[in-house]
Structures are given as C-alpha cells and as structure tokens.
Length: 171
Image (cartoon, rainbow, N blue to C red; front, side):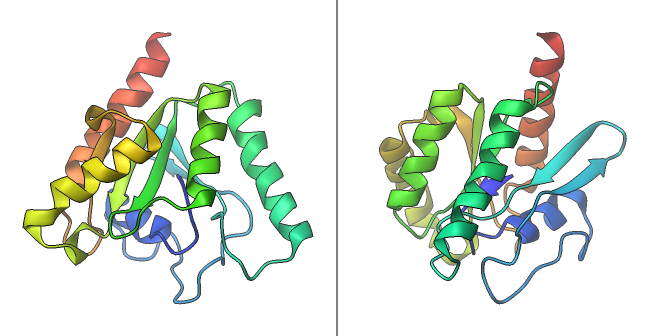
C-alpha cells in the first residue's frame, strides 16, 4: 500500500480488512514512518509503506523514507504488486509522478486505488479517475474507485488484490 501522505492509506486498510482500528489513523499527515505489515487471513501480507511527499520532514528523513520504499520495491521477491493510492480530488503531484516512474523502473505491477471517491460528485468520478490515469499512464482496468467512508469499491479492490496475488503465485 503506497501513496502520498494524507491520501487515506490507513483508512483504506481498515476498510479492506473490515476493522475500524487495525491501521492507526491520524488527523496529522505523515505519521507512518516505517513499514507496517498486516497478515490477512493466512492469504497475504499487506505492507503499509510510509507516505511520500510530506513537506514537514527533514531532507534526511525524506531520503530514509525513500530508501525504505525502494527496499520493499526491489528487495522483496514475494512482492506481488503495489496498491498505489491516489486522491481522486487531486491531480497527481510531482511526487506522485516521480513515484510512478520508480514503479515503472522497477517493473512492479500496479493497481491504483482512487481514494476519497465519496468527496466527488457521482457525475464527476469517472472523468476524474480517467484524467488521473492519463497523467500516470495506466489503463482503466488497473484502477478502482474507492471510499473508505462509504465502502464504495472496497469489494472490488479486495477482489483485484486477490487476483494480483493469484497471478504472482502462478508465475
């Protein structure tokens, strides 16, 4: 699970596993500073990576967090893929685009979870998602619109994650 600070990683993890407080949420972004690993029903591990792009950390801490992310992306042969969280209300930032380049460089399978779908009107959601996918150069079949608050897209994301892990097991 990877995304900018304040994109809703902890809330989405809680929604995916059906527990309110498995992953700790905070009103203050940038609280996740290491990898949090969650074992899900003996089927898979979800790894909550530190958020990127948060301005209120030192340059040294930003480098350390980047190294943690790179270590997971390159040093884990069991990595089936990355669920990349992007806030549907925001255009991808420079940090998002840089992360997209890192993911492509490492050849990591990517599934986009467009978060906070409940904050955008129903008529605009599909257009917003398509706009974001154009910018990050990913096809629509690699994306799911989600809302941890309303539950929208949670079952679809669960199914997509399981399919991704099944594909990895078949390799």
